[in-house]
Length: 366
Image (cartoon, rainbow, N blue to C red; front, side):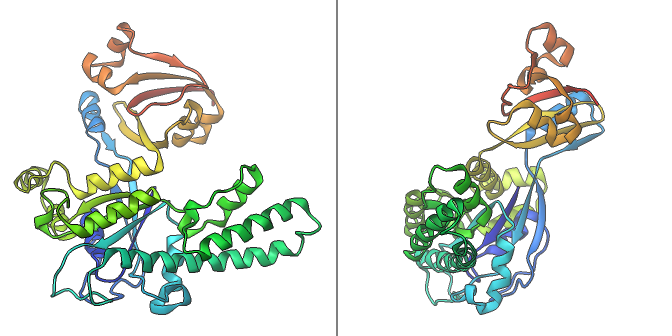
């Protein structure tokens, strides 16, 4: 999974990126500090895989990962190349979802490119630039499809959809809210456009430390972002990027104590991962053994052969059966053999839908 962190300059993007990845991306109080996208790969915290590693005395424990891309601050005119915008917008096309950092704190020492704090205006600025970039993509596609639309029925259908979609975007709407006709060809075409505004969005409301205790409930800027996100079906999580950076520099015990002192049960990274998995419909299944215990990320609803294919394509092609046990049962009984004896292990076939927390041993022909 790849998430792109976007927002206006000086809203806390690179600070958040630093805290998530400990990658040390340059962060400074001036626009365009980040010129090229910084990329960091972050393990997904998962105590299940740690406990299985202890049970099996595994040589290696491998967590699922998320790749974060810190994309430089966008400004008005980015879609026309303002502030190196075109190159940054191209980077966003590669991600699965967008984490839109929105400034919800006042600080006279940190300049805002528009001179005041107004998260909804900031969101609109970014969204309009993404819409303008998407319209360029549509214009090119329309020009191509129009040549054959009158003679080819499939091209005609796509042309009609493109014109409706163009009108939708010109109305200031994101592609995500466009109702694609229930036609397999058109659904496939819409997906191939890879529109920026069709990507799922998670809003990171960046607040001051004092607003963390009640999760931003008393902050009117956060309330405005939550209302906006609810209307478009997006997610919101509240963070203090500066505090997250401090947390990232602590070891696990110190981190737990620091969070407790702040009255928090989880870090911003934990919130973001939970929101990302929920938004994208993801979950993890596990494999366990003496050599390695590992978490694998799949979409909810994935069947056993396709889950096996995440490990290796040969596993999917030669799939026979999946031996499945819930990780809690495996931990409770202490071994796969004991779990079998207590009827907690199932032999599942090709139609089995994998569940979050399943520990699976795949049987296959090479």
